[in-house]
Amino acid sequence: MTLQEQIRSNRLRSAIVVAGFVLLLVVLAGLIGLVLDLSLGVVALAAAAAYGLFALVRSRSMVARMTGARELAPSELTPLRRLVENVSIAAGLPVTPEVRLVEDAAPNAFAAGLKPERSYVGVTTGLLRTMPKRELEAVLAHEVSHIRNRDTYLMTVATVFAGVIALVADIGFRSIAYGRGRSRRGGGALVAVLAIVGLLLAPYAALLLRMSLSRRRELLADAGAAEILNDPEAMALALRRLEADPTTVRYADASTSHLWVESPTDRVESDRQGISALSGLFNTHPPLASRIAALEQAGGFRLPERLPVDVSFAAEAGLAASPLS
Amino acid sequence: MPWFWILVGALVALVLLAIVGYNHLVRLRNEVGTGWANIDVQLQRRADLIPNLVETVRAYAAHERGVFEEVTRARTELQRAGTPGSAAAANEGLTAALGRLFAVAEAYPELRASENFLQLQEDLTDTEDKISAARRYYNATVMAFNTAVQSIPWLLLARPLGFREREFFSAQGDTAVPEVSFRP
Picture 1 (cartoon, rainbow over the protein chains, first blue to last red):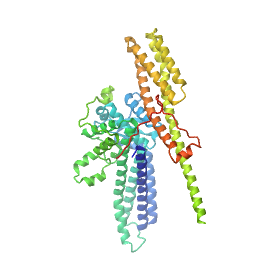
Picture 2: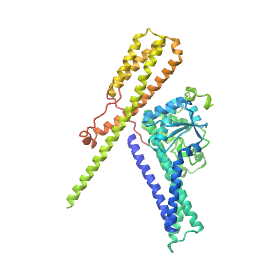
Picture 3: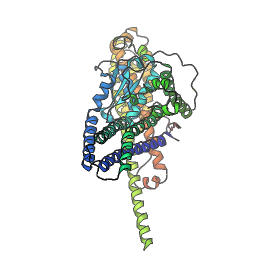
Picture 4: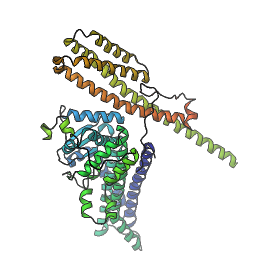
């Protein structure tokens, strides 16, 4: 399968997932309308739409706050900004994304923003201190291809959808629990039970949808980074280096875990949960080993057992002082 | 009567296919255009740095006239180049001439220590990196466009509507971009 075909099939899959979200929402509202009250179903949908719109408009600054990313001064970290510029030129982005810095020792990066023109790439100080230039470029290319593929857009929309479904399910469930709604169909005990089960399960279904979306995107972004730089080995090396690093981002929690290049929550969960098949369902990212294997297969190379010892980008570009110390 | 409707259906399907195909080709052609604009911006930026660089070196090494003329000639050639192929060749000519200029500069420690010279050198390196980044993107778009124009069914549409293959940005002529194949 070529990269172009991969992109196309991933786009199709995400379209199906988003359609699944919409279907889930409509079924949910329908259940509420059927079992309780038609007007309550309409109110729940309207509330969901309002909440969704608000979350979308505020998403950019919300992500910045949740991750602790700060804007850079115009003269700060010029070498890093040049790197992002080069990568986004090679990716054919119309506008170079802004760069934001997260003060964190764990090497990681993310991309955010609804439109490619108003997106930004966040990197941790740990990433600059860990990665040599070639691998840092690969990580940046990974984030830039998230932006190019409109993943950041899709992920934001998916996150908002998941929140909206949880909200609607909550409204419906509370209404049933407090018996405010009048049952319109007398003998619909079975329907009512089905509705309760549906309302209970909906948030988990939404969560699963969001996760499946993210995992496919990660493989695609890895492939995109390899294509942008014409260097699949650099991306694989960067992933291996992330794997070798034991630290986790401080600000990581479930709401932002899908954004990062290496999932900050998977590491914790995989230690905790014994049942690998079940926990696999709730991981936001495919395991790093399988991402590396995919790159090795695509590029026709094998990574050496031991990582090469390289000078980090921070040291090479003389950034060890000031903001990084 | 059913034959009539089958015929109408086939005709409608054909027209729809033609519309989809045309839009596909236009989109690819626009991407090639954007890709070329990206390269052009960086080439222009590189050419704009040259006079300043020549002046700076001249201040320290006035008698190295041959090298200055060579660099200036290579710059003019780059600005005159009309096609991607000739621009790529001119760009490589400029790289060679600049290589000789920097080799000459090695002999002048004061020049090498000059702030202005160091800044220009850094800007030139940055521009060269950006040219090679822009080239990767442009060549990928040309690859996609040419493949579409040469393959069935768009081939039947491309020729009559004037979609012609584009040139790669490469001094050696038609060098294909290696395609990364990917299996998850």
